[in-house]
Amino acid sequence: MSAARQPRLAVLLGDPAGVGPEMGVKLLARASNRAAADLLLVAPASALAAGERDAGLKLDPLTVHSRDAIRFEPGRVTHLLQPEPAGTVAPGQCSIVAGEVALQALTAATDLARDEMVHGIVFAPLNKHSLRMAGMQEEDELRYMQARLGVTGFTCEFNITDQLWTSRVTSHVPLREVAGLITQQSVADAVHIIDSALRRAGVARPRIAVSGLNPHAGDGGSIGREEIEVIAPVVERLRRDGLDASGPWSPDTVFIAARRGDFDAVVSMYHDQGQIAMKLMGFERGVTLHGGLPVPVATSASGSAFDIAGQGVARIDGLQHAFDLCVRIAGQGLPC
Image (cartoon, rainbow, N blue to C red):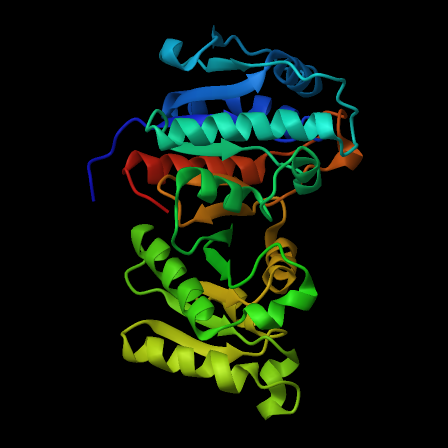
């Protein structure tokens, strides 16, 4: 592990129609955060102004107009100004305009990471529908960044609540497609990536529970055979390779054992199988970390919250935890 360094993080305000700008400003306004890293806000002036208004706070950033002009002053945010949107952002609504603002900032930050000008990215909640309206072809922002960074290996979202981590075999795909994507290779990849991430985070031998796909983990094959034909053989092979993996566990009880402390991580088969449980255990504290990228990219587990946009009541517990995690990983020069 390399010596700790002062990390340089790009900070994005997320979807401008939601609570992202408010959350981002609240995060950047904390002096302790500005001391922990060199912070580069990537946003148009209008998004920053909206965030300041909603948060009831005023930042004093050092504004720069190009990548070549980026510099940092101790304790002060540097603002890399982005072009203003072509239209008006309607609060609480998905739109092409909102998606374009968010996608433009995401693209700029990803390019900065690719060129090693930042060591990590923290972003306030995005809205995937708005991103797709604005032209994003990939299933989510992780796959968008993966393509732009030229990453060819397995990637997935880690969801983290307190000490418990999850990865998943499939992510933002229609439920009807999930079973066909559960292969021995994809399950093994999801286990390996979270095992490696937890070891980098300081867990010497991660205890990993692998969920089944079907109710009751298939009930001996009477409710599906994926557990017998796909998942169990992978778990057995991983154990022979030295990983502390177990399963397939029944999806409706595995998180009870995990919450009790029996496991460090759960590998779920699809999005809601893990996300519902994790959000019930700590929605306000939850973190999403994008695994498999060359730099840490993190956000809060909460969404863009259109229902409370502009009200000034958004909490940033999860975003703060995401920031802290990103600082720790980026400060060691580690990938995800």
